[in-house]
Length: 255
Image (cartoon, rainbow, N blue to C red; front, side, top):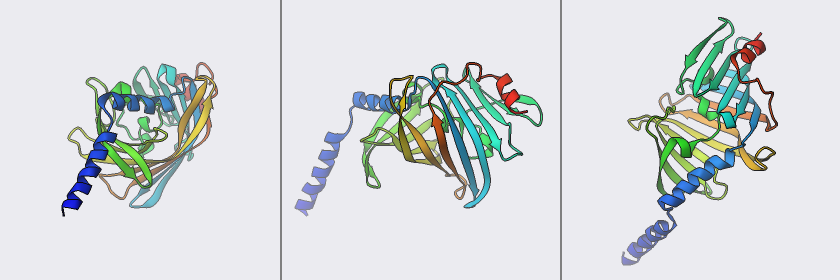
């Protein structure tokens, strides 16, 4: 019994020694953002599969455009035909939805579900964790075979985000997120998200490598049998045309 107590105390002591200080935690959160920061433009072809009660119900194809230096973002649906031309636009921290069938725009929020799926704007956008959240180190853990840092993040005052509390499991080696959980203000678990595939790409605008997610698996924790699979293909970091992030551009593409 004594030997077991000593063994357990040894494990706890080793974990405490490996735990990150507040300064090291801040550096880690900044590294997560920096890993994905392109300092230029971004485009990808996205496939979104929505499942309800574990059965596929919706399949979308869309194009995602970003200009991270100006905090601008577009997702333009191309398939199915019934959704083709629908577009979301974020400019100056405002998000707008264009419905081509009605020919009109409406303002939406960070909490809006993209195309009625479990995905949201933040799932396709640049990481801004250091800018938007305060951070707390929870512990050193294992996620499958990967040693990970477990972090808790709480939104900063005056910042509008979809979920005010996040838990992250960050790969020790790459500093990429492997798992994320989104919580409401009352800390009710809303979504669990896995990032099983990341790709390293060279960014000419940044003059350095960046990591881009290639697959995102989103699980609804309120309606337990609902989930969303996001596959990102044909990722390009080349410059986009100058006037792309406008309502007029989306309207033209929607015709």
